[in-house]
Image (cartoon, rainbow, N blue to C red; front, side, top):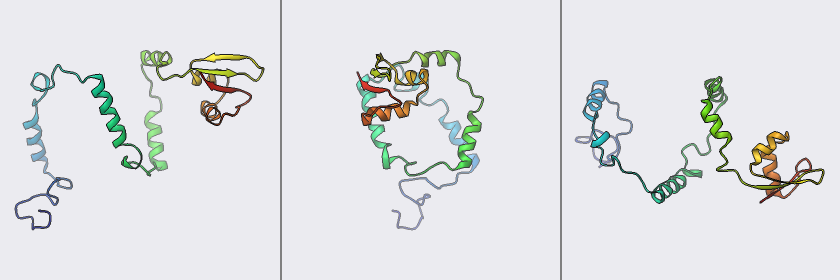
Length: 160
C-alpha cells in the first residue's frame, strides 16, 4: 500500500498518521466527539483493579521494553541549555511537608548493613544514605566500596 500513489490513502504510511497535519477545526471536532466516551461508569474497566501479579508483569514488560538501547533517549544527553532550563524550573519548588515526612520514614528500599568504624566499633544500620549523611560521607562512594569490598574513609560496609 505504501508504494502505490496516495489516491485513497491520506497518510504517507499505511499504518501510521505520523506526520499528518490536521486543521485546528478537525482537531476540535475530534475532541468534542471523544468527550465523555469511556469515562467514569462508561469505562469497561470502571470499578475493577489489576491484580498484583498483573501489575508486576506489566512493570516487568515495560522495564524490558524501555531499558537500554530500546529506550528512545538511549545514547542521548541533555545539552547545557536544557539542563539550565530544568534547573530553573525546579528552583524554589517545594514538596508538601507530608510528602517530605513520608520520604524520611520510608525505608521500603533501604537495605541493612553492618558497618566497621575506623575506631573498631561495629554497628548495624538500616539505611546507608542516612548513615552517610550523619557521618559526612558520600553514599555513592560508600556503595562503591561495598561493591569493591574496600574501605571508604576507614569505614567498611557489609550487607547484612
